[in-house]
Amino acid sequence: MLYWIVLILLILGIIAVLGGTFVTIKKNRAEDARLFRRRKGRRRDEEDYDEDGYPDDDDYDDEEDDYDERPRRRRSQRVSDRDTDEPAPRRQKRRRQWKIIMEDIDSWQKYNFIFYETVGIGRGKDGSMFEKYLSLPNDVRVSKVHCVIIHHGDRLYLKDEDSRNGTFLNGKRIDRPIVIQKDDVIGVGETRLEIQRILRESE
Figure 1 (cartoon, rainbow, N blue to C red):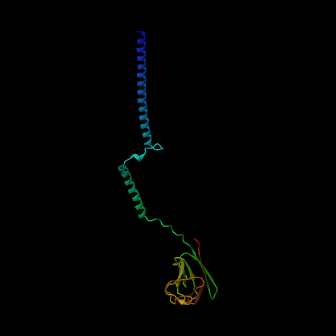
Figure 2 (spheres, rainbow, N blue to C red; figure 1 turned 90 degrees about the vertical axis):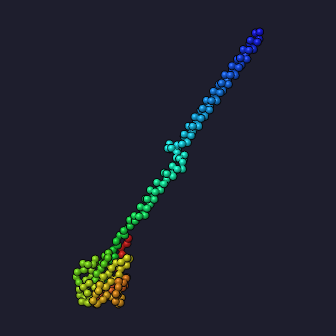
Figure 3 (cartoon, rainbow, N blue to C red; figure 1 turned 30 degrees about the horizontal axis):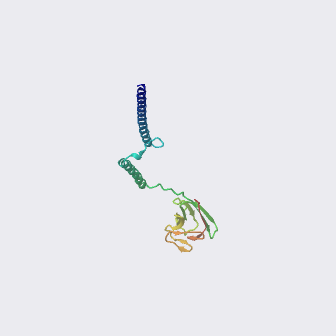
């Protein structure tokens, strides 16, 4: 009789141990599943932020992207249109001076002029309309305002100023502005002026 009592108690003890073990295993599995879901949710939340801690915009849908981009394009287009409408400021060239050296062939007298635009030649004493002025009062065939040397572009030109006896370059009468250079001879009245040098200020 005692044998059966001990056997029943052993069986009940085994059943109690197995039941407790089953309940413990079930609780552990439930806890593991809960921790896994919690970690997964935390990882997803972390993926929604970039490395600098700012929300990641990759999850925005296409409509929001289109909405944000169109105004930016219009602003940049307005800026580009404004840039094309406004001309770029031009860089002004620095004015450069000229230097011309002439010599009277007959008297060997030299004349030096440094100027920007004009050198007038005539018999009159008043050459205020020109930047520089060469007066030839002893030549009666020279008009009061006879001719002018003009700077135009990168060259110097000789122009007659409706003189009575005309202006000559290398023996030929001129009727329009003509380019002058070294060794040319300007003829006004009885005076012949040889151009010995033409210099221009460097940039």
